[in-house]
Image 1: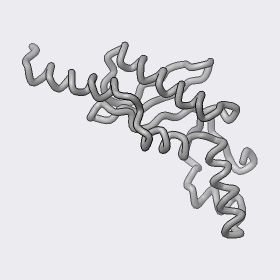
Image 2 (image 1 turned 60 degrees about the horizontal axis):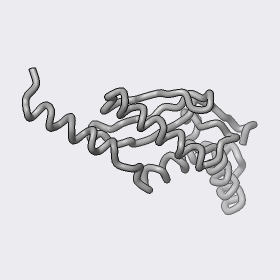
Image 3 (image 1 turned 90 degrees about the horizontal axis):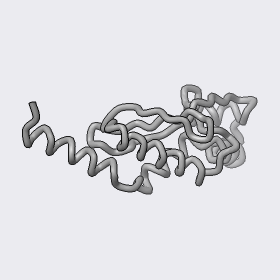
Image 4 (image 1 turned 60 degrees about the vertical axis):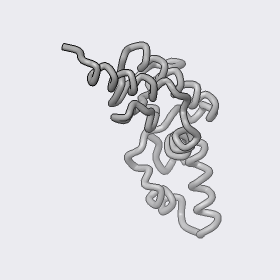
Length: 131
């Protein structure tokens, strides 16, 4: 049974999800799940601190992360995230994980309980030899 409270909450979630991705969200996605930016972070740590690549990878705690395709540009990653967000709206997915195929790659977005995209990631795992 629907009531104003139920439908009002759902509309607020739809409204939140319909807003463009914030800069902080796109920065988070890029800094944590864009292979090329993470590779630059590793190189910066190695160059500035003298730590090994393995130590830098441990510092960044990337062992459990998944990444977008390393051949994708940051622009492609953001477009893929927007595509997944639009697909979530179309399919009335208002919270939790939502996965889509984009350019043949599985990507997942997480939608917070407030109806906002909190992160996005691909399904690629990279390790020391990849960086």
